[in-house]
Length: 92
Image 1 (spheres, rainbow, N blue to C red):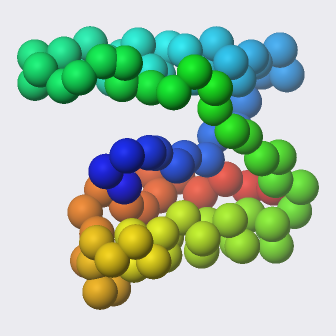
Image 2: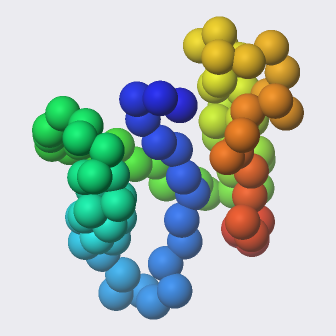
């Protein structure tokens, strides 16, 4: 999506801090995009998370994310959107 990102993540350790992960992700992306001269700030202050509790919930949310570019008129088919897919499927 041109103005937001969706991703699914699972902690490796129980002590994992989602806020710190998001902060590190934003910092990395900002450093990579800085040479493009994009207006700042790149990120809104808060982020939104959703806890997946079952395989059914995962599938429902994945389908929402997968079809998001179609709903926004960016592509005719979800398969046509570059940079969309799974690096590795989360097991619940």
